[in-house]
Image (cartoon, rainbow, N blue to C red):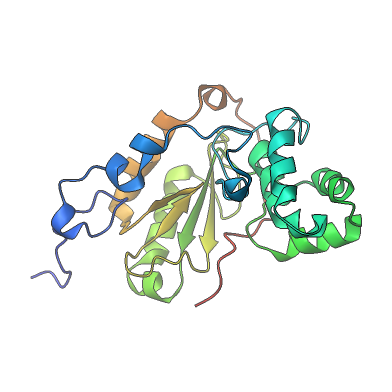
Length: 246
């Protein structure tokens, strides 16, 4: 007899316990059917700073804050009494564009917000949601805190590493994945929780991992799929999602 409580909605790996709403599909739960495509320039200034900033499509060599991104930065800055208040969302916007926050990007942000480069680096290296090295198309963060750990998070972490043929913090040889541990993802009711870029997967078990990875490969931006295989995996000395510890 299983010691696990059966889920009414099954366990598709993304929605957790659906309860009486087992008929809903993922697009219904996430709201992707009606949210639509987010404009790069942002909509109202009040929401300009709330975009997901870890996306599959990255442009490491792109110049920061040009075109629609300049418009969004202006909206972000307008929300705060001083430019210093816009530092965190400005760093997030830089990461959204390039995929990580390089020292050069920190310097650009410092100039834009009229802050010292040392201050910006101090902030960027303190918060764990900023990648300071390139990551794969998909940044996979596996929660290994108490609730998830008790429900087999270590085995989920091992499965992701094995199926991506990588080590923690590495970019996989195909450039697709970087797998990291997360201290807490705030989804303790649906262990094991996994955050992949801006999207949550809940109730993940080791046997779910191959299906999730296959799905991500299908969904990857076409330009990323053509990336050359690097001879040696790139070590990414980054931290994980900036969630408070439980």
